[in-house]
Length: 143
Image 1 (cartoon, rainbow, N blue to C red):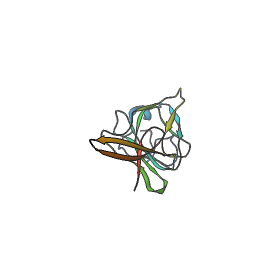
Image 2: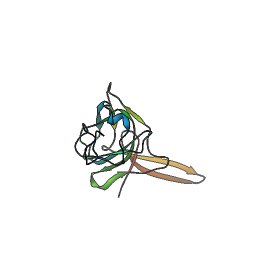
Image 3: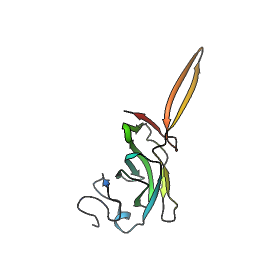
Image 4: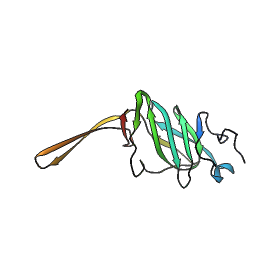
């Protein structure tokens, strides 16, 4: 196997924690490790899920970019500074996005967050919902 004892795949950025028991075969057999630019800031923890696999990649304080194997991913969890985190939902949040060697690879996640309001009418009543969303429309709440 081509893995380090701590479960991190060689070539990935420091601070990455592999949460699955086994790494997908393509990453072990030399799949391209790509750079994903993060369009956002204030991220304390970012967790991605790889499509078709049980593996999750967790990035602590990812900064402006991260390195990960080519493939399709979904944002599973985001924690921001000041105890703000992405609201979990069912079905799981967000669409799948592709990371490829051809690039460019970019992900809008984290701050800045934009306040949004939704008004719904129920007969003579109005319901006002307030939400904080990132550049991709993911909802966040303060803990």
